[in-house]
Figure 1 (tube, rainbow, N blue to C red):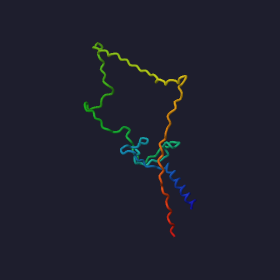
Figure 2: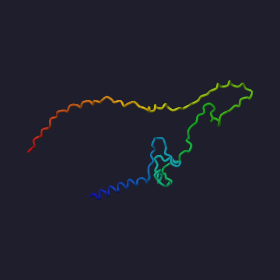
Figure 3: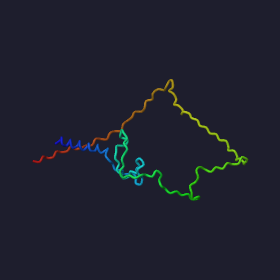
Figure 4: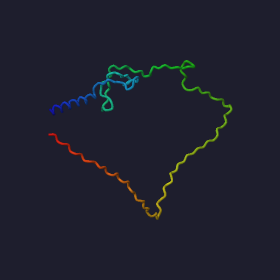
Length: 157
């Protein structure tokens, strides 16, 4: 009986170990966020193949039921003033050479420094004698409680 139970246990644990390499159904961790594998949206699709960090070789996974993902999401754009996208870069206007220059900025100077904290004084050459601390009196222990021993019950006959 024990050997049959041990055999059933070993078979059951081996099946769990073999489940690592079988096909899996991909379920996204957050709703609305697709799972993209090699440019394919694999959300709620079946993925088959040995792949991942635990494998020594990389085998291209096979995806059943996935659809191609848009490389650039199709979102609307809104340009309120001109109605078209702005130009590339910024519009720079070169000022005239004979213009009035602004007032020069005031001078500014700032510096930083670092230093170590003061050290503890060294032990003097002739230290003072040792000072004896006052005696420590421990608090008195509580008085023992007077428990009565239990009386044995009569044995039924």
